[in-house]
Length: 77
Image (tube, rainbow, N blue to C red; front, side):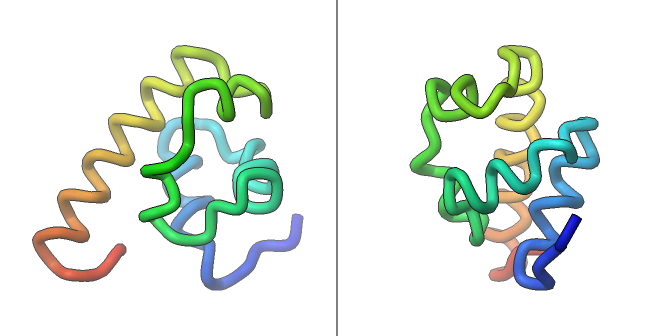
């Protein structure tokens, strides 16, 4: 797998909820390259790339946590 340094955060986020196999689909298929891009992803987008409802839930919980960190520290981890 080719991992872009700019999206290493995405792989780490996905690994936290055991969804790292969707890294390329999110990065390339849905063009998620910044944490802010997750604001525009719909459940139907995640379903279309094969992420189940439980996976969507865990991903959304991590997304909320990361956004809080960004808000507090002014940058994503």
